[in-house]
Image (cartoon, rainbow, N blue to C red):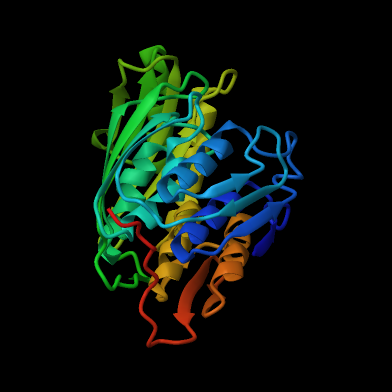
Amino acid sequence: MITIDGAQGEGGGQILRTALTLSMATGKPFQIDRIRAGRAKPGLMRQHLAAVRAAAAVCGGRVAGDEPGSTRLRFEPGPVRAGDYIFAINSAGSTALVLQTVLLPLALASQPSSLVLRGGTHNGNAPPFEFVDRALLPLLRRIGLAVTAGLKRPGFYPAGGGQVEVAIAPADDPLRPLDILERGESRGRSAEAILANLPFAVAQRELDTLRAALDWPVGAMQPRIETQADGPGNVLAVTLVFEAVTEVVTGFGERGLAAETIARDVAGRTAAYLGSGAAVGPFLADQLLLPMALCRGGRFSTVQPTAHTTTNLAVIGAFLDDIRFEVAAAEEARWTIGVSSARWDDAPIRTMTAAP
């Protein structure tokens, strides 16, 4: 039984989600204590419970402590069962974070699966759908995971009500390690101001401010009006397409936060990423660690690792003691993260799959 301190490092819900994914992929049970102990509202919240219950559903896992506010959880996985699943968070809790929990185990199973995820698709505390679809999934497909996703209905905070549908086919065996030290040539850049049930002027002000700050052409700026959302919502998304990687930088509208403030923040983070020379931004770096660990190989350049990244590395190490991550500063604003296996003749991890 692996024991994990849920308050270590960054101390957030990612510790739990990473542990759930690796538990399903390796068959190792775990107990996590002091879940989110340093947060204003410690313990399991609705979206964390949704991830736990989704994990239990796909592997027939046994769970103790899956209650609102619980600060201790025990999880004993069973064989992963490919199939058709519907997971509803029933709030604006992130569909992306539930997907993050179950995607790799299901992709490594021997039969295809489909997911319908209902809840929040655009939430300031989680990757929005555009990031998942444009930045993350293309890289997962490059390593051999056959995954596609579609946004059927947006769900903004706090109303939720969104729906994402995901198709997962069995992954290639073996998986192919990523090597993304350089971005390569620029293939395009664009910005979208996504609006739901808000005045169009909000999008126009965001795009005008962003264009002035980045000195981009008018043609790179596009408003996108969502007509089927349950409540109001606003996301400003910059998409940077390079030969080797696509990055998505986002900002989220909030009550009382000026459109110009959102745009200046997004422009600043876009300029910082471009100026760093790194291939992978901080959020994409977090998302790539688990696939790299399961490939037992790969490397990428990124900006200075965040506490989120270093905490994720620690949790991965608790489950996989035969791999080694190397984190090194290459330049002032550019770092390299790579993983290697202590036993290169090992086959990549495959999930245990229940008999049909």
